[in-house]
Length: 74
Image (cartoon, rainbow, N blue to C red):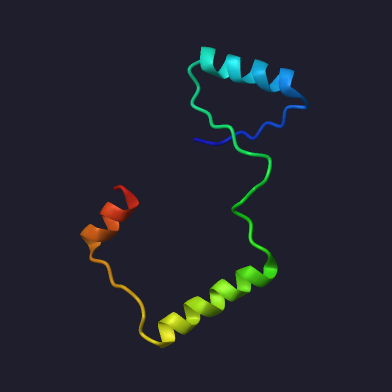
């Protein structure tokens, strides 16, 4: 199912939307204003370089099909 991102202008709108979603029994989550999942460009490339180094040094793990399914919750 698709997701919908809503940006209420104030606390009153947020409260009203929350009440409406609860009444409709719609699953939702309220995230903080700061998106902590975003990386700076420098951090992004540092992670990629680290991963490449790990592969070159043989520091990787191989998971069986069952372990993959368990990890992914399938």
